[in-house]
Length: 403
Image (cartoon, rainbow, N blue to C red; front, side, top):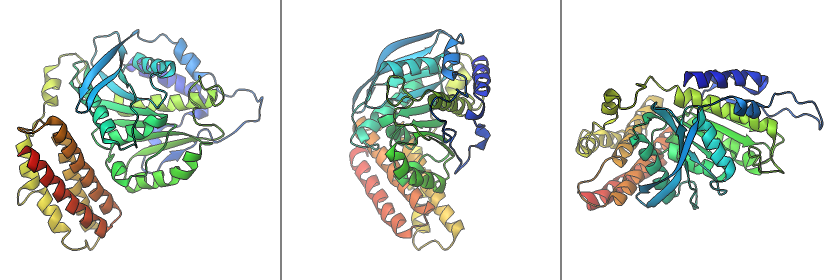
């Protein structure tokens, strides 16, 4: 892995000013390496990064079609990984409506060649970025990757292109992931979804001539900053949607695509590949033991619903409007713990009732708790109280089916 990262770093330096140090990543950070434009016919300023990258000898990759089971049906995709016996970080890749085309398959293999297990999933038409069936399928894919013996369960990222960008962002806001990349797609302005990202770093890659970018980007940045989500936004001026795909003859922009790919590789390398130290040998008993859940459903319920539990403390802290920032932070902290409890419950098995209903109820609980987090971030007392009532109703609905 270190060898492949070093080769990427050297290639990154070769493209000069197109790469900005990721040490700049912080809440509210925004860069636009593609903002400068050259007159037609001007001499190329950057070497062809993708051509150079593809010319470097990478690890042989093996790919195969896989099928996994989710609460809403089967999920199909293409799994790729280097021909090694290493345990590796993983990436879930979410394509847009174009599906598993040659470019997405090639991109998946190239990411695998530098040291990832990649799962490119078959897209499913969703009504919106928060579509529950879509989210159930993607969540199942992440859990499937985490259970694989050749994957570090605590080193998984997600990347979405075009119409897959919104679902990728929603997924990262609904379960713990190391990083989220959204490329050339629509952005959600759902404060609850973005608040759910919390410490998950986000890289956004957008086309400057895409109308959606101009309309939605200011609000997107504002909500990410308010939710304290580490993020970096790159807008490439003068290019249209689809600029990263060579198959799009009218919109493909080679130099901007190369810069974007360098950013993506470096971002994933820092936040997924270089996650905290992990044992490097397959079958490591220490790693497998660490991956086992400790808290049972009963443990979580007692900690949350006991008279002196987190939910009771949250109710008490919202009996009247918080008087200062310190009190609002206390509200946020308790709501955030409830959201984490919802995430933990999604990976547990109920003693009674269907697994599909359990997963749905746990996701609903998390979503409502995240809405309280978002209200606390905005210091909106009316919204926090209203959403807290929904939280109680969510608990009741779950108990009727599973207690």
